[in-house]
Length: 299
Image (cartoon, rainbow, N blue to C red; front, side, top):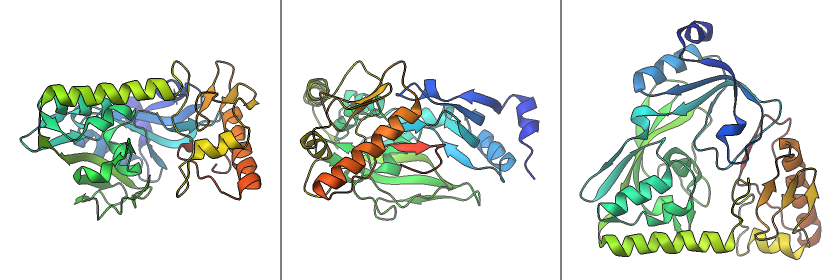
C-alpha cells in the first residue's frame, strides 16, 4: 500500500506541482505528486512509497508536452548525485540528470573528445540513453559504453550496454518501469581547442537553421527512412500553419512553436493535423519524437 502521504508530510514529495515551467514549451498542467531525489536512498524511499502509483521521470523537459489536465501519479526528477560528472582518462561517467551540453563542455575542457555533438542536444543523460539522442550524424549509441538502469518495479539495478539497450534511431528497449541512473561514455584524448571549435560549429548551425528565442521542444517528428520530416512538412505547404497559439515554424518545418497564449492542446492538435496532411499528401506516417503525456490518446 502506498505511503505517499507520509512522504508528503516529510517534505520529500510535493502534491500538485506545475510541470509547464520545467519544460521548454513552458505550458502544461500539474503533477499529481512530484519529487526531486538527490540520493539513491531518497530514490528508493520514494519508489517504495509509490509502488502502486504510475511513475514518470522528468529530465530537462526538452522533448515533452504535458496536457493541461496534468499527469497522474508520481513525477520524478533526478538531482544531487545524479547530476555529477567524473572525467577519466578515456571515459566520462555522468549521472542521468546531467545536462548534455554541460556534459559536452566538461568533457571537452578536459581534453576528452567525442562528446562534442551533445552540445546541440538540450536534454539529459537519462533522456539521451532512453531516446538514443543525437545530432550531426552522431548518436548516443556511438559513444555509450554502458548505462546503469533501475527497474522501479523490482528495485534491481543492472548495467546495460548499447547492444543490450537495442539502441536504434531515437529508440531503446527501456520500459516504463526502467529508470536510467547513470551512464559511461567512451572518449578519446584530443586537442581542447579543436573540440571547442567543433562545439561552436554545432551551436552556430543550430542558430542558423533552427528557431531560436521561441518556446519549442525541438524536432517534433522522427525523420522517416531516407527522407526528412521537415522537408515533407514544408512540401505539404504547412509552414506557418496555426492552431490557436501554436504554429509550425517558418524557419524549420519540423518545429512547432508555442506562443504565450498557446495551450498544450493547441500543440497536440497541430501535431495531429500535420501528421494527417503529410500522410494524405505523401503516404508517409510521421512518428512523433516528442513525448505527449496526460492526453487521452498518445500523439
